[in-house]
Length: 235
Image (cartoon, rainbow, N blue to C red; front, side):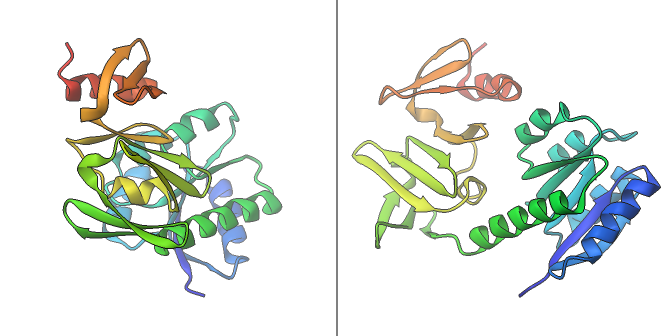
């Protein structure tokens, strides 16, 4: 099995050492580097083939949430924090899991297995982009052609995606992140953790909810509302 490259970021030496020792005990993990300074780590991750980042949240200069938002390439992030309440903020950034200090090895192993499953799913995605305007997906044992302009929204449902178009809906095994790499701005927007929507399909906005032309209502993540309004031209 191909090893997964990982980096560890924590301004506490003892915490770094614990995670490093755990990672060395997992056969499919390969530690590329450890960092005290998250800025140094950010520069490293942007230029290296990193699969998993283990990152503390509370750090000087650049906290873990800011670090993830600054990433340009797609990596799996597992947050490590002394404060359980930070987990919600972590998941808003798309983190795969979080570990609470002091980290236990059994919980660490559960998190890295989850990350491995996610990466294997991503690499074996059942979505094929054949041209700029269409994809084929594996759904119910057959290949289905979908024109990107027809997509109203995409919803993550566990290990599957529900892709909704005016004539119906399809389910395929894939990650929302892999779909996000195909459905990009300015036409498509990830409105929250589980949904990507076609901005042309928005009929109305009411508070923290959008209603689409097919009647579907979707909540807007608080940190996405301002950007959504800008994209829709709402003042």
